[in-house]
Every structure is written in C-alpha cells, then in structure tokens.
Image 1 (cartoon, rainbow, N blue to C red):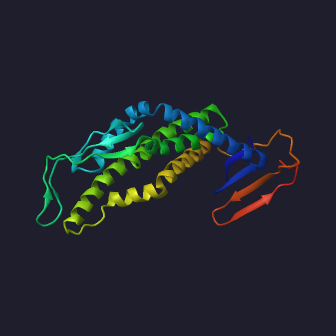
Image 2 (image 1 turned 180 degrees about the horizontal axis):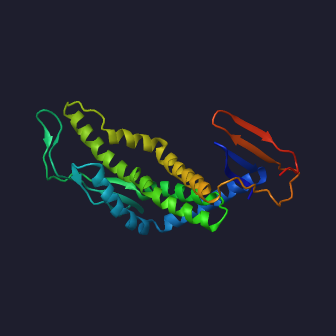
Length: 253
C-alpha cells in the first residue's frame, strides 16, 4: 500500500498514492463494521472484563463513595448500573448534608456507549498498514499501554461525574450554590467529542511511534510498482516551520 509515514530531518515525509488512499478508507470502514459487530455480539463478555477495571478507576478518581458497576439488561438493552454508597458525609449547604453510609440512587450508562472508544481505537490502529510483523507487534504493545488511558477517561469518568452532578443539583434545589466539580467539567468535554478524539489520538501516537521504532528512515512504498496514469503519487513534507506539497510527475519514484 502506497502510504508512508517517515522522518525527514526534523520533519515528516508522507507519500500518498491517491488510489491507495481510497482503498485505505474502504479498509477502515470494513474494519470498523467488523469490530462493531463483534463488540455488539460480545458486549456482555467485554463488560465482564472491563467492569473490574471500571471499579478500580472509580475508586481512584474520588473517595466519597464506593460502587461496584454491573451490567444489567433493561428494555432489551445492556446497561452499566452503578449504585454509589457514601463513605462520608457530603455537605449540601450550611445546614444540610448527605449522611454517610447511605445508598444513592442508581446511575446508568449504555454498554454500547461505553464501547465506542474501544471500537475507534481498534479500528484506527489496525486500519493503517504496517511494514513488518515486528512493527505490528510493537503497535499492539503500544495500544495495550494506551488502553488504560482510554478506559479511564471515558465510562468511569462519566459515571463519577454523573454522581457529582446529581449532588450539585440537589444542593441547588435546597438553595445552596455550588461550583462545578473538575471531574464534571472533564466529563462534559469528553461527552462533547473528547471520547472520539482521545482514542484516535492514542491510535495515531501508536502508529507513529511504532513506525519510528521499526521503520526508521523513509522507505518509499511505491518502489517496484508500475505508476498509474490516473492516480499519481503526492509527496507532502511537513517541516517544523513550513509545509511543502509537491506533486511528483508520473514515473518518478
């Protein structure tokens, strides 16, 4: 496939063959469809693996309550249910507070909603071609290292933020002013597009680092291929201070 990410001095050099760019898009759509179907069919099993991680991350994000998220089926849809149990009193106003050792109402997040970042991460990582099995192995290892970040900043953050937002709204109902907690602000950002941006950013980093470690210098992917009359390669050089795009004539490799 005529796509390359390599280093040129302190910048980056990318060779893109227009026909291969179209095939890359088709490959990405196909992989996304396959991964989506697999996650929908195996969502219960995936949640069984992820829920213990969610529980640990929720405890790390805050210390006001404990909760053990679990998967429940509601109206033919799998949901993540979390019922917080307060460990200490939470002040609502000067005269009111939530007593400790009380159970709050349950909070829910859709399982499909929780799995979207994982689908995006796997799709983006596997769609970009790799030059060797060594590069594929390095990329897989980097993806496993980045996976906890994607998991921590999506569903567990959202669940904790919903509890904190419920407490803020309860305080407002009793006439007490309250600032928006930092985790709520972070969750609002994630739900406004950050949950899509984060896995794609992690995937791009994994692809770039794996190519840097395994490929090193630029290896032209069009070498040995017959140039196409209708799809000529485009060379794009990304330098630290400028961006130069040069269209290469047919037959130039």
